Length: 150
Image (cartoon, rainbow, N blue to C red):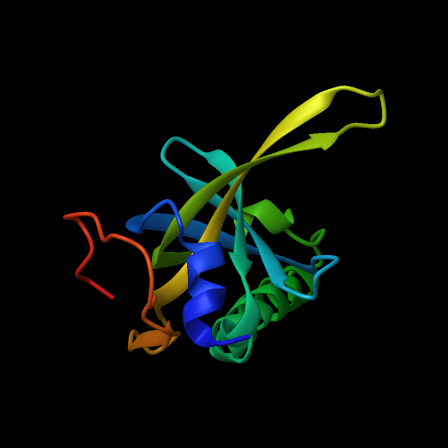
């Protein structure tokens, strides 16, 4: 699959940029993409998807999330406290991508709305305060006026 075809499938609804607070809850989707729990606005939970050719670019962000989790658990153990709640470990990021709404069936048979954000490019600050920019510019999709930081 060419990068253009991949991006046409991912970003067909256009691109926007959002501020996301990521937490170190990282999984793989059935398609092999990386999913990360995040929060936007007033704490609304979303899933950020790093798909296709952008998966290798996720490495530095994965390492930073892992480092934050390890440091938080180490600090708690050193103080003889319980490990922190994973949702209390935050990595702020600015992500350019596209929204996608999915419905998943719960164990009770109800449809649950899942808001996903498909990442194209992103920036976050590492422990030294250095801005780490990664991902790839989308080759398809109209950009909204707020895109420009990545």
